[in-house]
Figure 1 (cartoon, rainbow, N blue to C red):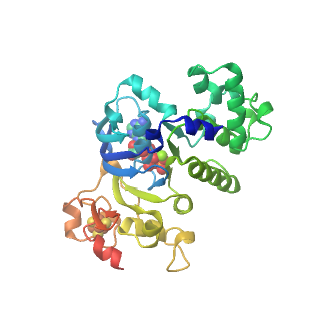
Figure 2: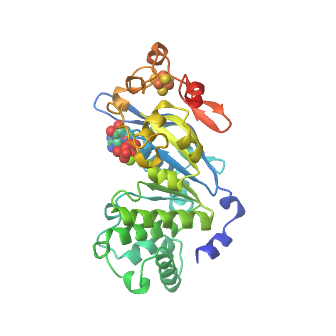
Figure 3: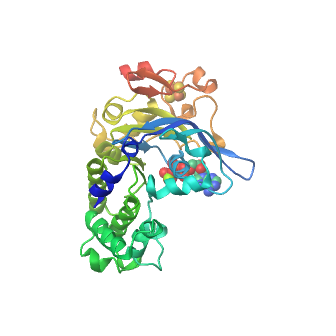
Length: 336
Ligand SMILES: Nc1ncnc2c1ncn2[C@@H]1O[C@H](COP(=O)(O)OP(=O)(O)OP(=O)(O)O)[C@@H](O)[C@H]1O
Ligand code: SF4
Ligand SMILES: [Mg+2]
């Protein structure tokens, strides 16, 4: 079913590419606006998975919500979010509603919160198809195909269940079916497996990765778990206190990071650490956007910090082909 939907798309859609250029998000706070995303730039090329990683509060969710246009009330944005030549921050509300679901879809961390408890799974997965004016029979068979595709057993029966009648893993599968129903070109997945137990997590990640590859979708996968990114992402964007610390091909960044923060993240996870067997927990607490340290926000925790780091904000620059880092000493970090 999804194959046939794909072939009906205009060629432009399958070449989809998202480009965030100096994206800024300000949220209202008790003492004035707080810049929670501060000049973030990255690309999501068609057919690739980009992992967005960073500690809690680094601005990952706000970046994804800016793309789908669901930022909290009162949020102000700056910079550009180019989607197939259009700046999503400046399109009409009508165009934005059309993009949501049909071109860009989002899978949330907690499907129970994202799904409506009083509507059947089938009704919710079919919602966007009904809005598109498809016939009842067409909607029903498409919903069954979608649920089958994401691994919901006996989909013709299970589509009549309510969300509470599904297990956590099945609910997340239903959420993925819902996200795919409008044939999007870009999937945003915000911690899609964090609420699930470990074996179910692995299955859902494999499912997402296979759908992304088979359909040639672009995917922005938000996670605080480096192991998830290592398994699934082609490119990685590392965020710290609302800014990009480093970005580049996932395998290269995780093997030989060009930013001390990424090095510390990698060292804190035993499974992706390559140099010694033990993990070193990250020292100190993450900087918060409301209390961002001067200069390089990572300086209070950085083992390499020099005087310059306390006063001068490091610019993100290309330090090797395809490798970007916002550290004054990135070349030296890369050489270690
Ligand atoms: N509704 C809100 N109003 C004001 N500030 C908010 C709101 N939601 C989040 N924030 C703040 O915005 C910053 C970025 O939050 P965001 O949710 O994007 O972080 P995150 O990287 O997704 O973290 P996590 O890993 O915990 O999900 C945080 O400092 C957070 O406290
Ligand atoms: S700029 Fe300085 S403080 Fe920041 S990561 Fe690089 S060495 Fe550390
Ligand atoms: Mg988040």
